Image (cartoon, rainbow, N blue to C red; front, side):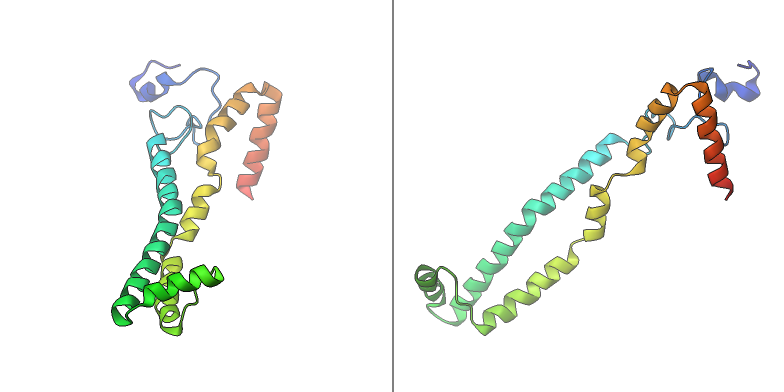
Length: 159
């Protein structure tokens, strides 16, 4: 390694390190040795958000149903006892047209407002989270395989 100030940024690099195409090591941002492009805390936060959504969705549906029954009970006296009787009698609530007109649009709105694409994208494996594994695999390859890997990648980049 050179000692000149022009190449001072290269001093932290190991001698036989595999280089990126513009002479960088193949890890992400500075200070993140394992190749991840975002800190682990963000991953934990997004996982937490997914769990909140999974558990909050059923609670929100139950709340909407409870509010709907309460509203109908205010409009039609004895409505909640009618639902309780029908639940006891038939095992399912016999919902009339106004309740369906109230609950269905809210359910559709809730389903439409959930960012499903973002959730699916988070659940899919992200390439950036596995780049440290690829770096370890590359280090374990012998030199001939490493050269073949580099040539194959260079060809793919050119086309």
